[in-house]
Amino acid sequence: MKELRFTLEEPAKRNFGAAKKNKRETGSDYEEKAAGFLQSCGYTILEKNYRIRTGEIDLIVRDRKYLVFCEVKYRADKRVDTALEAVDQKKQMKIINTARYYLMRHPSLENLLIRFDVIGINRYGHIEHIQNAFEE
Image (tube, rainbow, N blue to C red; front, top):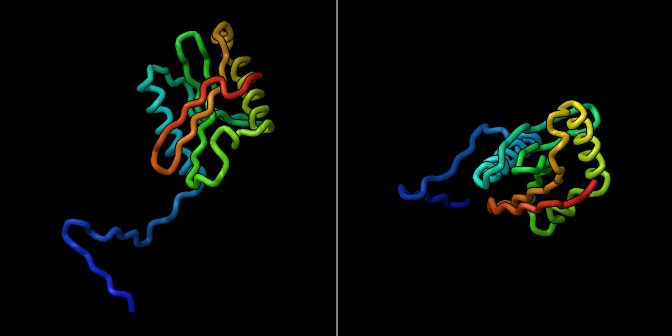
């Protein structure tokens, strides 16, 4: 029998009946963290979780003369590929095509320079922002 000890300084963390978050909920949490990070760097958030039938973009932001389409990746395990590696060519094409559709629907933004960034967040909350991670 395993003995459990609790102290007043460190109460036991009990999670009775709490449901584990699904991937979409976890992703939304980290997308919010990424949005907060970008805002603290002076970016303006235009859209969160922009979705069309054929794709989605986690964050669409404005960085002075740039319209930036951001993919947010959370990595809990260091042995798993990096955030940038997780955005393979197929995913890049989906993001690019979704960005084209977004621009078609928002012609007032067409004169801005376009950039595709990847934001990686690890299990310790460290944020890695890769500007111009890929090109159209």
